[in-house]
Amino acid sequence: MTIKCISPIDGSVYAERQTLSRRDADAAVIRANTAQKEWNMRPIEERIELVRLGVAAIGAMNKEIVPEIAWQMGRPVRYGGEFGGFNERASYMADIAIDALAPIEIENSNEFNRIIKRIPHGLVLVVAPWNYPYMTAINTVAPALIAGNAVMLKHASQTPLVGERMAKAFHSVGIPRDVFQNVFLDHATTSGLISDRAFNFINFTGSVGGGIAMEKAAAGTFTGLGLELGGKDPGYVMEDANLDAAVDTLIDGAMFNSGQCCCGIERIYVIESLFESFIEKAVAIVSQYKLGNPLDPETTIGPMANIRFADEVRAQTQEAIKDGAKAHIDPSLFPMDGGAYLMPQILTNVSHNMRVMREESFGPVVGIMSVKDDEEAIKLINDSNFGLTASLWTEDTQRAEAIADKIETGTVFMNRADYLDPALCWTGCKDTGRGGGLSIIGYHNLTRPKSYHLKKG
Image (cartoon, rainbow, N blue to C red):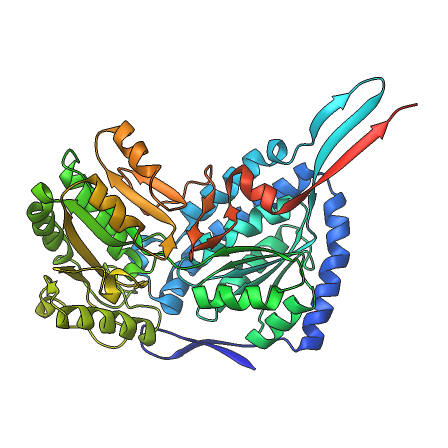
């Protein structure tokens, strides 16, 4: 089978790769398991240093990587790629590794030595998405390698060059080829490997449907799974909010990367007294965007990664308008709209009966509703099958924390949005998935506890 990356820029085949046969995939698994045992015996300080060097090697490639990302998934080159976040996340996990993975000493006396150690799972499969192809992959790859695991990276078919870049960088600094492998696998081979217990842990970032397929494949194997799936992240603007900051941040969170962000803002609730002003300011911002070829430095919003993604957002938007929603952005401002190129849109007069307010859009459209108080906002925020992040806007920290305690989500932001803090656990609830990445908890999920009860004499 061949994997093809169809570029959203012009519909051309940008990259094409042959998938591994089951026999070759099985051989790759055997090599990884063999190499992992030697890798785990290396001092942790050595593993940390090699991962840091590999990350730096990616940074040295950034000039080539930025246009590759544009060609593969459409993000404008003006934004300079992902190395800032890639480096921040990997560096933080390297910084905390020794403490995070240190044995927990319960007793060391004349009679007993009792310790809990963190043991690597063995072989970790990382299935990474196309929307932030470097940053999402490194979330698991860096700590997994540092903890002593071998890693097989299966990247999205829309971004096949990313895994190759990471493999080239890591191998160039001395991480063994069999310890970190970039693989091209079709769905059937992937499911077969999982069902046959080829992996000791699996981290998947992608759609709800993909997560369900992973769980079905792993059923009965007791293989650990980390799943980050869909999202419908809300923002709530209270009467004491810094309105300009709230509009700038939430609209950027809704529209950046053509709305294709795991924790992007997809619905906004604004207190009644600020609603009209919020809409006016939001429309002014979005009306200034330039939709176009992502290779053009003037472009601020590029195409969506695939025509079918753009068509889904168009369908949600058109259904909402048909059911009474009001569209605020003038189509004449975006003459390039069509195909994978999708103009941004702001909708009001929306309700939770509309798909655009309930289903993941993952595109440059946001519905905005007026609310009368915190109680109504909390009810609407929780009226969702998803729970990744929520963004609260107020000057009152205690009020924000009290609201946060009632929100069904993995992360709550106050006066910011659409950001992944590597010191905090990246996690979700409901259909967004399970498990957690980054932070000390990320290391706990990529290892298993092993207890030592040693009686002396």
